[in-house]
Image (tube, rainbow, N blue to C red; front, side, top):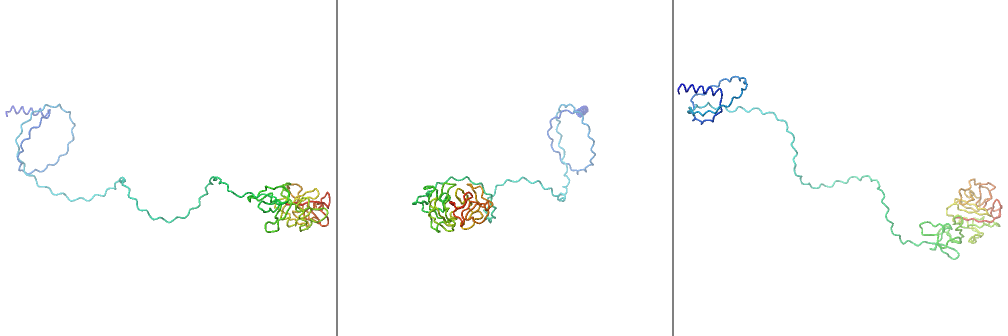
Length: 357
């Protein structure tokens, strides 16, 4: 190479260095040179890192130069140094890391149902619950055949029940016990009836006269008092057959008179001359001793609103008497020393009648 060419190349190199052109295409690789035989030199000390310079402005891209010729392959370098020692010893085990968060619950298929366990022992009986509301009434059943009502029939001059039995009093015919099948129907009204005053199995039934219309009805005539004698002052019966007429004179026994009461008040209706008094059911009638207690508790109206409250007791007032006026009382059933009955207006010797129900 001539000096002139060298100068030109140097100038071109300076120009290329100062103003780089565009990178040209890489030339073909030259052949590998032989390996050098020398030992590797020791590594130099690493210099301090210089400060980073400011980035200069990019120069314009130069024109791509032509590819230079491939240089000859250099010699092969020497063999490298020996292999370094094996890896150092294992370091200590690091600390256990924190437990990770619980993973999401897996969705497995449901297992098979196990066999049924044995039945447990019965528990104690619980308390009885409150009674529920009553249900609606059921429909009425058909009426049974029942027995035909027993009514009143004539039996000669008297009357009795159609089944051949007898009531205990006139009041018993007029007001038979409900639900027994007996009915005040048929041959009804005032007149003669046969009664069984002490019930079946006692004394024989007998005939009486019944007032079925006056003052509630059901009254049995038990004594017809004559103003001419004291026959009504007797514990026993006196001429009872005459009592089948409302104007007859006679008397049933005191026991029969008390048996003919039904228990309703007033139980006694006593008339002497034209005066009538009423006495309560708790009077136990005794025709042969002085009256007392409820047997001197009278009322002069029907139905009574009250009975006499003074109830004086003194001699000469047998059976029933007005007990409100002391010795001046003047409605008296009887007294052995005087005939008939007594009123204030008439004195002794009056006729009258005693009815019970």
